[in-house]
Image (cartoon, rainbow, N blue to C red; front, top):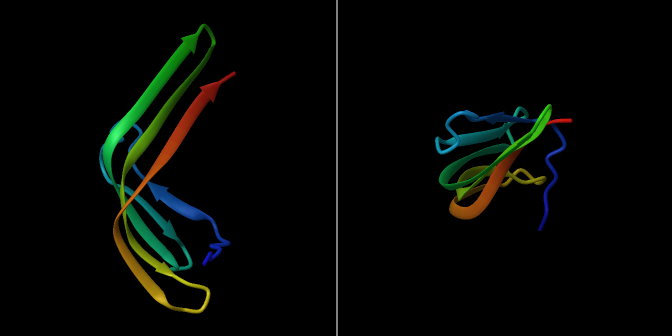
Length: 89
């Protein structure tokens, strides 16, 4: 079953230290999860004034989700990833 979180999510992590804990939460209180990284697939390309850099971090998600019906679901050690990419064009 799918549940939509229709609000903006707050992401907390350090670009310079991507192997530290990543936290994601819904300001409405329906989602609080953390990613414990195990591997950072880092790529960086510089081409003069253009460039791109990406951290694709793989690890295990744990946290709590509140369903549309109000049920609280806790989970831990769920495999997944998160990423951020920064580009100059």
